[in-house]
Amino acid sequence: MLRVFYTLLYHTVMSFLMPREFFKRPSDRRFLWLRHKLGHFKETFPSLRKCIWIHAVSVGEVMAISTLIKIFAEDYNVLLSTITDTGFEVAKSRFKDLPVRVIYLPLDCPFAIKRTLKHFQPKALLIAETELWPNLIVETSKKIPVFLINGRLTEKSFKNYKKFKFFSRKC
Image 1: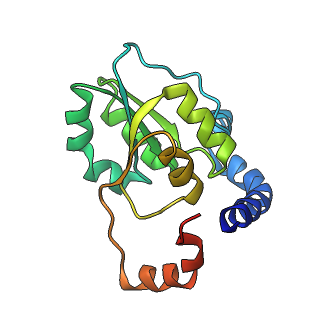
Image 2 (image 1 turned 60 degrees about the vertical axis):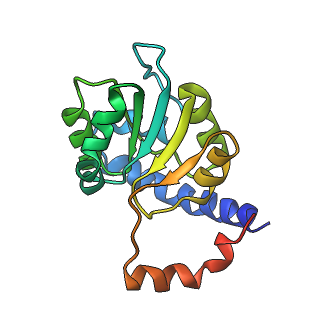
Image 3 (image 1 turned 120 degrees about the vertical axis):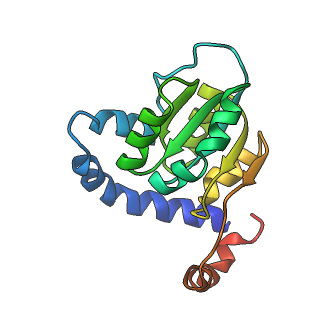
């Protein structure tokens, strides 16, 4: 029930924020960003190798897990999601010669997450940040394993998460 409330609240807030977020993107990237946020992708992988999804919020996380991405890219296609434009650009540039597809993280809505899973068919999701998205975790964990690989909380973040601990109870 709490996840339903969260999802409704998220949809409501995002309906107001999406236009601002859309227009703050560089004009040549706006529709790519919007497609990714809604779970619509043109990107595919050149080979039929299994796919691993890694989520890195921004530049810092992309840089922190670069070695891990390169190791995975030896045996897997890597789907790398980011939230920020700079994280997206750094990831595209850094892994351009590897089997890595960089996308913007879809909205934390079940429909967008399910579309992403269906399109790329990853075998696992590795989250490289403690920016946790409830629907991403719940919907993905129904199909594949989910791992938090680089999580840390500052004292301030811990206090903020505690204020909303009722959302983190089992849904």
